[in-house]
Image (cartoon, rainbow, N blue to C red; front, top):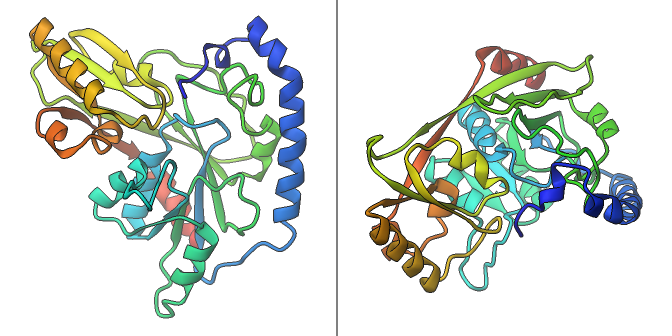
Length: 301
């Protein structure tokens, strides 16, 4: 689905949905406690990279940086994955394209499988497992985007939070993705280390080239703000599966404006082959400050 507009402000709709947030939190707490009664402990260190927002903060590039640094396998649920129909999670494809070993599906089962590789003590990176109490994490890292912060600071469905801010006490550290534009003040626990990352977007066209930009991610405006000379923007629901009709409409729109189509890598991997041949993506390069890896190596060891 598209990110609701009330996730950013305490609008009347957010207040109407607030009672449902209380119910959501109650059920979530119960599930968390039940699953956490006997957590699985991996023989290899588990580095969990998660968030408390419902997607869109840029966690996957952080997972990629950490897994590349340690040459670690990644275990992830694989959102919108459909093995029966041959559909693979877009995040999994992105990570695999970087040469990483990616295991999708039940994370506990994959951890058990990886632990059978007896001679390998490399850390395992778990993507999006901060709310998963059934697995013990040696290090828990929570990612935030400086331009989004915590939205309206309300729980789902009244706001974007999966858990209240008090849950951040479980984190070992925070990674904040810097923003060149809008910046939101984050109220984070002062007794936890905080590190910063910066994204660089490389567009495969010159600055004079007109662009039709489209994206099906949690917060598409983050992508649009990185581009210049955009004549048309098209936002789709997160993890959107593009149809032949969608692609034709986008190609016709680009022709009408004498523009080129541009999208994110996450969207590009969801396109069929014929569309990938005609459409390019903006490459996102994420760099985390060096002292983060010094800290992480010490924690893992």
